[in-house]
Image (cartoon, rainbow, N blue to C red; front, side, top):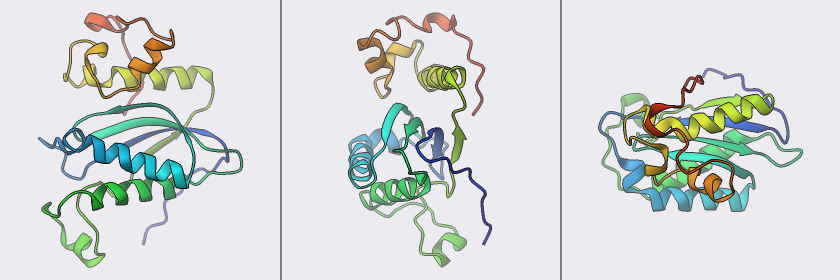
Length: 176
């Protein structure tokens, strides 16, 4: 089995991208958003972290977490979250032979993308990237139209104007 190298910095802030295995035309995360929220709550209760920002799209999600001081184990949290969510979904997805051998479900991509947030500029850029993502992928014309995002919390706190990113006037540089 391949050993993936991941950085471990206790108490750090991380950006994540997590994808469903079958992305094209899949709306599972939106169709089952209450189950996804329940899975997040389940994991946060057992392995606390601060959810700094998030966006849920039909087939993937982006978020920023800050782990508690002395804790760098985000992999366990993602494993628990994926598992808890998967158990709430009936088994009817395509399962590859390699997944069947390992008794795995076929809902999620096995891995996830993580990025250690380095400084305030990096943090700000990733927050913007998260909130801009529904516009980037053509789901809505303006950021405020996407309901499954922490953008609305940031607006309520006065950190973004309601019309931020309107009509493509915001150019995001961060990549996926």
